Structure formats: C-alpha cells, structure tokens
Image (cartoon, rainbow, N blue to C red; front, side):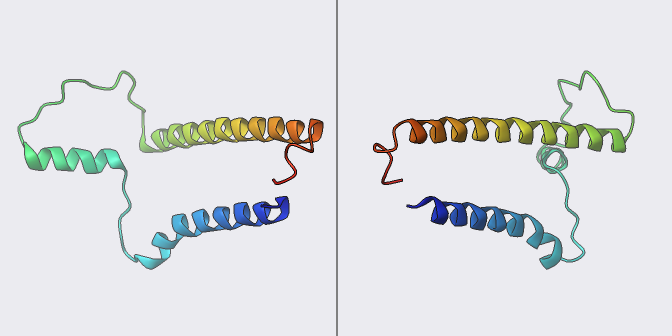
Length: 107
C-alpha cells in the first residue's frame, strides 16, 4: 500500500469515527444521553433496591460542572498520551524507512 493511499485510508477512518460520534445526536431526537455510571446505578437499583455501596469516592466534586471539567481534563490528557505514542511509533517507523529504504520498498 502506498503512503498516499494509506493517508487517504487514515483520513477516511477519522471521518468515519467523527460521523459515528456525531450521528446519534442528530438521528435520535429528544433523547437523553447519560453516562455509564448512571446506567449502572439504575441497573443495580432495579436488581436490588436495598443494595448499599461498600465504597464511596475519596473526593467528591463540589458541583456537576467541576465533575464535567475533570472528566474533560481526563479525556484530554488521555488523548494527548495516545497521540504522543502514535507519533512516537510513526517517527520510529519513518526513521527506519529512511535508514533502510530497500527493506521497506513495498510499504
């Protein structure tokens, strides 16, 4: 696969991920999108209404906005780490190709 077609494939994959992430917001009108924590809590209460949690969070955010901020910060840091690792491996691969182009002429 040539680098040009690989670039197109990567671009198409990024577009597909963005479309899959945004499409439910437009296709499912008047829906409430919640987190997995809320869904899990509702399922546990449905199974056993007398269930008492055995552990509570060490730090409880003061408000929902702070909780959202922390969640967004966590997502941003995770994305940065993943992007760094992908860039690191891509750089290593490009360096290998530049040092030994005959070994990678099929790529």
